[in-house]
Length: 117
Length: 445
Image (cartoon, rainbow over the protein chains, first blue to last red):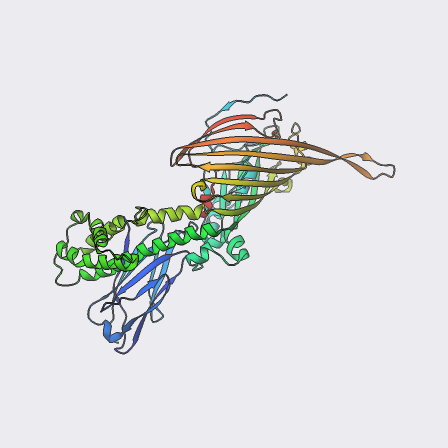
């Protein structure tokens, strides 16, 4: 059974007119990750591997929490860990790390709230 | 006259070492240090960080009184590159641009082995220390690119579908209208269908509907939808999706595709060259001043793994150059016949199948020594070149009884051993309990 790593009750205060940029950054080697951020509306931002996507303005992300879901895997035999940094506007939000002996295909779920500054 | 040696032995590969030659594997050893020392340590430490390396060395080479000791039956492998993170993408890992940094440095491993039971010719137990180095160069081909691309695309698609479903599922459970499992499944069904349609570019509504039904086939066995503990429900739901998300062509689920890719990375088709070096130090008088290096070995092993239906086959060549300290062998192994230089060259074909593997190898050996042969009229030292050629042909059959237990049978004609020169015919059965010598996998994992 695949293990899910949940990071709940995350908060990142933003101003109403501030752009919110979400970044997935690999730390360990050879990660394969697909990330989807469930934002209001139909076009959820998706990140193929590493990268940064605009989630919207701060005002658009109020109210309900935003779910960021990553399906990760690491097939590299030399690597023991899966380490991934999740950032918002270049600030580290979560530093995920798990040993591959524990799970080599983890799901990573971030539940983020964007309160006003 | 050669004498038949029929050895039927149950060989627990963690036995102590003796100064006798083992069957020489054609491939470069995963641990040159252990190979030269002739030991098969019960466990090989593979520290994955510099801190762990320091701990391993300190705890084994320093005794409780703070004195430096040489541990018995000790093996250690260290691959410095993998002791730290480099944020390599899978593309950079699989296809390094730079041969030096991307291949030679990355694959460099250093090994060390020691024993206190290296027996001299008169059976005196002495200390032995081995050091080794190994690296691998890999040259992929077009077919390798195709295979890797196919795996990566399939994994990316599976992940994208699951990430879309997971992002929606984890949001749905917070919506007030979702009151139970039925509400949840009704709400997630169109999300799954859209993800399949978009990612797999599937136009047939009927086919998509069938796939959704397959994915949700086990939904009746999901745990109770408990609003106070939704994590358990969501975990079970996502695992159901993972299990039932099946590749339409090959009928493989996401885990199987990943496992196949992992297996392929360890045995990529194409050409590779292993290069290894090892040196053995012996301390005949049990002190550092008596240290002598009786043997150095250098291996170059090119190999080619075939593609498609021949992918279970591998062809290896070998070039091995060894130098022996003949003075040492004359003094401590007076009955042995050792040449100063040995050059081995040969070829092997191996096949790996589900439960067994087979290897056939043929290796030639050219040995020579310069032997003092008096002096000329002006008093200059003269030398005579003694040389000998030899041949080894061995077939090895390995049957895996289970993951940790393998039965091995070798049959053939070996090189003339150093210590019992007439014993060349080999018929050897061994039972390997899987905790013997280091394997390539030990190094990489």
